[in-house]
Image 1 (tube, rainbow, N blue to C red):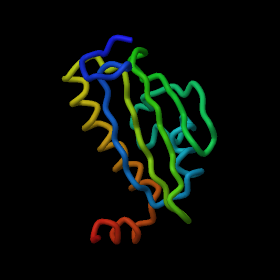
Image 2 (image 1 turned 30 degrees about the vertical axis):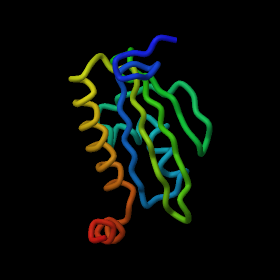
Image 3 (image 1 turned 60 degrees about the horizontal axis):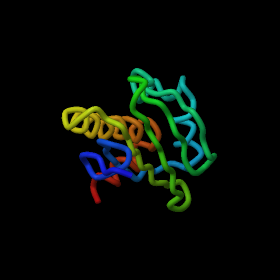
Length: 125
């Protein structure tokens, strides 16, 4: 298989990982339920194609061409790790824009899901 510009079979891509002080099931619901997703992803951005409950989900991005894979990892009681892999981006400009977009989106998700006192504590450490 030929290697593309960024060296992957998926073309230009980005990956963003964040820890969230919330159970996997709650975080997964924030991604998989359109109504909930619109609250923190703003425009909803993606259409979920399939999912493995508690593990991952795959979606088509609003542009209809790129794809998003979200992976969830349980990190103990009330804590998980979320990794966003956004693939098939058009080029370097989209890579930069989407990296910034996902960092901001995951910050909004954390603010929506984490209790205020936990957010303050996690910023202090």
